[in-house]
Length: 455
Image 1 (tube, rainbow, N blue to C red):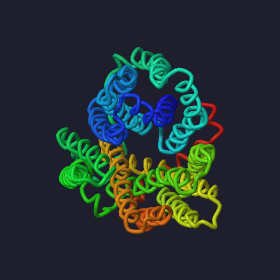
Image 2 (cartoon, rainbow, N blue to C red; image 1 turned 180 degrees about the vertical axis):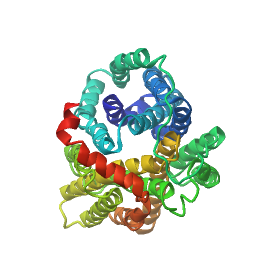
Image 3 (cartoon, rainbow, N blue to C red; image 1 turned 90 degrees about the vertical axis):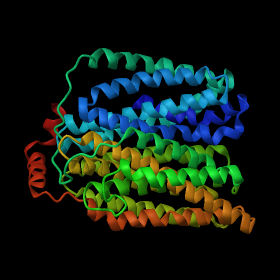
Image 4 (cartoon, one colour; image 1 turned 90 degrees about the horizontal axis):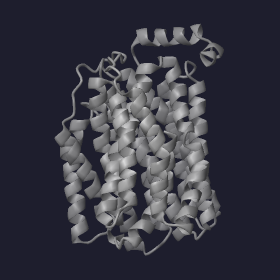
């Protein structure tokens, strides 16, 4: 997870440089969106594979494929090869993310899962501090290709270690908590492929407003409407109690946060003209805040109901959205916009691990891979849809008002809808099985923290 975070944060600032070097700036939106689109497919593959054979094999495949995809990107001679490298890297990331969640669900008891997920969040702290500046220095002194080669080299050792240590292990039985969701409905590979293509088309389409881009946007949205429900639990769009509501709230919170993360730096650099170091501080502060809030939710295990942590996290994000809208005003110092990203990260640090734990608790017997896959799919769909809507609104307001700041105010205001919806619907994610609740409480009281840490 540490190397996943390092690669993600180090690569993103280099993609525009690589696209320019490969004479493919016009296709940059496709390159940038390929990773998210492919992680949809990787999540579905990983979830189905983990339910059938346990999380070890998809985890091995994910870490091994990561090395290969970094080498594909490093040796790119055309923008299409770079896009292929990012696409396959997204598949690898989807496999790893789902496998890790399933492994935590199977290997840890309920009262330790929150702390395991907090550790996963903490793995992003050092990459957020060191990844972008180190990648920038290597690219400036050498080339962007050296960054990809270096990341492949760093990832090679743990990839080989994972393959050697995990190969030959027997398939684990899935001992997920029995929820009330009934038999597991396995998503079809064809639906996953269609949704991945739809996500890529939509992200490319909203990057401009000519006929070609409009056709891509409409086609992508049509495919999403037709095929996305097949990858998610029934009643997801109606926020049905249990796993459906949990999956929907992952989409809403992820869409709001990552849209805010995309537009605040854009506003700072274009409309408010702040130094690049301020934008960098926003990302660093957000990563630290997310990890700190995730650590806090781990310590609150057994003291506060998970669905309340989701509601509180969404409430904090609502405050961050209001802060972002206020920071658009010229009288407000531009650097104050950094606080909105940090505040939103606090909310995500509380809500995201809580939603993951709730999804594992609501998963049907033998279906933790399916639940993790649905959560990964919802996260990426939320990012795609909310960002697309906000981008479209930004473009329309810009054309109508010919203003630099007003479009950002409208785009930020749009994010009030998903975060307030999360606050209202959080109660539908609660675990209603009284037996599970008693088991969790007794586990907490019979196993002191000191003994857990010693073990």
